[in-house]
Image (cartoon, rainbow, N blue to C red):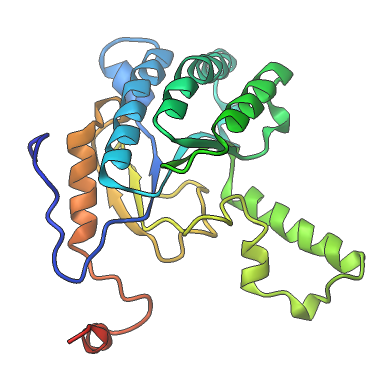
Length: 254
């Protein structure tokens, strides 16, 4: 797909409102070039810029990027330290640009494990962009889908203990209201780069009916062309949500 090619939206299909991306392959990209792993993460920042710009241009409402999982603390200490420094640098240099373009930034995950300076920088970035009405950009950092469900269940349990709620009154909607992205539609499309085909504990509550797109492209190589290809693939799919194709056809306006 050429970089200037427009998306083709078939009849009855619509653009994804919310796209989630598992940004994988930074280390392998660097290794193939005989570079340290952190070089791959630094190169991946350009891909982050590209997909943000693409989503904003295409009118996507929300973009959620899996930047650092709760399992990533197991990586070599030097790499983790470098990732934290890169995160701090990105917040310092990119947020005002996001703000100028009306993008609202939010960081989801258990932020208590981050250092006080990084936590303060996150709060500052979120406060600066909180009133923006453009693309909702969510960065998942020290995030895990099981953590998300657990903290939501804990909040409901506290309400039960306080006498505000009975266990048999708990609904899916109530639990969803306490998850990290409760105010956004669930992801329509999840993209994973780097050739792996798993969700790695990412948004496992929210992605019950998400369409998946897997590519061998390493994250530092993922640009607007690749992003448009992923969206075009999504636009070819029939989303039935438990119904049959015949039911969908019958529901179409005459």
